[in-house]
Length: 197
Image 1 (cartoon, rainbow, N blue to C red):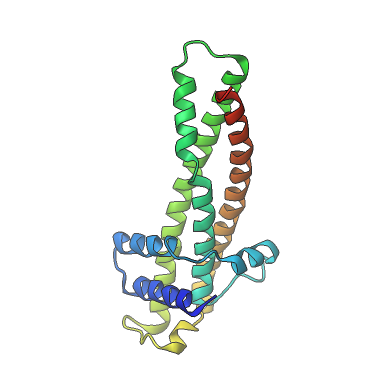
Image 2 (cartoon, rainbow, N blue to C red):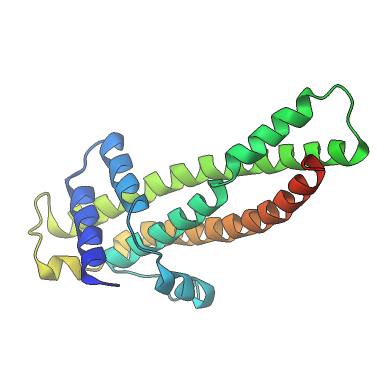
């Protein structure tokens, strides 16, 4: 991670500490989402992490997992509008071929699953950011000094009992995002074959 990216993570962490409303927390998540960081190291860790014993305890590491999940969310939603248009196009046909009917049902199921997954994810991301906020204030009080030591900080054991289950749930969402991305890629090939013939 280069220093510029680290500074953005620090800025987001500072904003989380200073936040007090859902709108503030949403702004922190949006800033993390727009970060120019592919989180490659997090993806490597995500593939090998023992979720029972190796979940991170550092403030910035928790944000990195959230950042990785936002990257996967973005990958999943890049083609959403294409599938919605395909669904509308197929739905509007008065007579559909058998393969078109099958595609219509598969696209409908995919869109439904993605909508449910995204809704769950957004609520989970909000809860995680709120717990990060609460965990830091629990350690440092209402006005922590934002120095170098602060940014190296770890949650205490009591806070981790709330944060680790959320991080684990977030990693499960990453698994589900990756599964839906695989489905999306396969479905996109079928969509192109059927609708472009």
